[in-house]
Image (cartoon, rainbow, N blue to C red; front, side, top):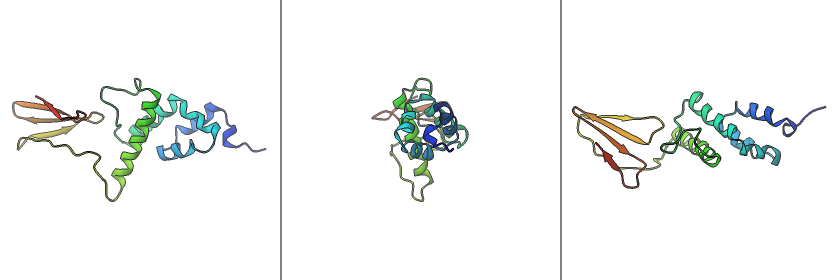
Length: 142
């Protein structure tokens, strides 16, 4: 007697899905109605994001001020899909910028990017500036 994957208990499927990369997870969820129902499980998407961060060492494109615990189900799903698009773009032979923003920096300033945050921090002796990359019109706080 053989079982199809769709006949596995939901907890077993969720455990298996923890080990899939994002592309395989998204493809697997499109197999059939029974498996597609798993897309409504928060833990599925949280594990996908944790895997991206810890196993694939990929920064997470989280909305400003949000954590995995505070994201809604829709935001979790969207974040996984955005992270996948970002990874595909960066791995391509000709990556395309998603957004180009002007940034004026003093000569000799050190520029820091904070993983998971959409800010640019610049430092020059006696001055620190934080530029919010999420703003419609980039604003700089010194």
